[in-house]
Each structure stands twice: as C-alpha cells, then as structure tokens.
Length: 86
Image (tube, rainbow, N blue to C red; front, side, top):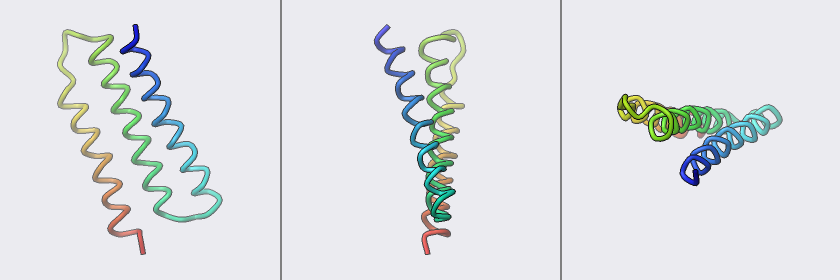
C-alpha cells in the first residue's frame, strides 16, 4: 500500500512541476522554462510506467520503456540547456 502511494505522489509531483513551469513559461516566455516543463512531463509519464511495472503489471518487464522515457526526458532538458540557454 505504501509503495503504491509513493509512486502516485511521484507522478503527481512531476505533473505539478510541469504545470507550474509551463504556467511560468506562458508569462515570461523564457525558452528554458518550456524545456524544463517538457522534461518533467516526460518524467511524469516515466513514473506512470514505473507504477504500472511495479504495482499493476508484474508479468511484463517494462524496464526498457522506463529507461527510454527517462533518457528522452534527460536529452530534452540537455537540449534546452545547450541550445536555448543564451
């Protein structure tokens, strides 16, 4: 019960961060805020896959999908930091 609650709280935290960053981007138009919001949005989906892997679907290994989503999230943020930070 407690691990499932923690997974759900992690999902909500990622989506909450993405929402707040996107709201700040709409006000300030700083491109780095957009890339950070997209990063947290993708991490939220990775957390959903983690929840499904650990708590719901135990027969199928979703580790490659989780790792791929996390890699995409890091690459999105890295792109934003390198090309949009000026």
